Amino acid sequence: MNSLEPLIVGAKLGLPVPDADGMGRAFPELQMYLPFIYGRPCYPSCVADSKGEVVCCTYVEDATGLERFFRGVCVKQGMASGVAIGALTLSEVLKTCVHFSVSNAWQLGRAVARARKAHLSVVESVCSHQEGKLIIVGKVLSVDRVSEKGFTKSVVIVEGLDEFLGHRVKILAKNENYIIRYLDSSSAAKLKDGPVLACTPDLICAIDSDEGFPITTEAVRYGMRVAVLVIPANPLLKTPQAMRVVGPAAFGFGDIQYAPPQTIKDIRHLVA
Figure: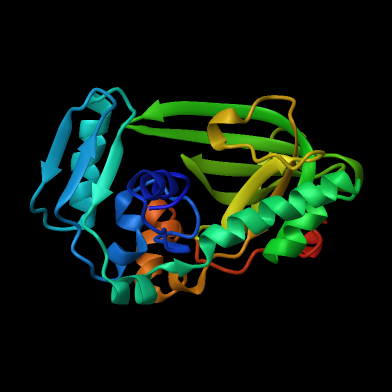
């Protein structure tokens, strides 16, 4: 669907790989695959583990049903499985996939490498290349993480440093980050949830604040110095049809409406 797997398969089979994918970012569930969102049947599909056990699905009512079925299989296979779905037609790739995502990835990597070599800000380079917004630079203050039904859920609190000193944010994740909100520290008793700064389907990223290496949700640890950025999602993920599947409500937050990301500077009048 994305990442390195299609390149590995293409290299082994001697076939070209389209400069496109079905998400344009990472999402935790199969129904969030764009061709499924826009009506492509999700069967036949297969899931396999490293020992060669293969489970095939020849019919399922919808992609959510496929996700539940394959998630259960994945848990039984030791939480490490590969999924293959039926091939897309050229028309489906053109209409329902995010284009130029592969080249965008290597161009971003090149921009980061050049920034490091020139001793420039890697964070600024990523934001410039991806039209992103910097939310906070700080230290990871706490990490609460639990594995549940094949997913890793976490709540991370980041305390601001330098120009962000005195500010804190909370990041909620389900395999991937999906909501970041400001934490109101006006009460001495406890931190309270403040305004939402960004939410899915926009991509909330944590990177090493000095070198720019990506920090995945399972790799976040107490004390890490991180920069938290928000990168805008592809327009295909922001239609009403897609929002029902990848918006905040899909993660259990029906009270949060999607809005373009805000920086701490944008909401200072609300938390002063």
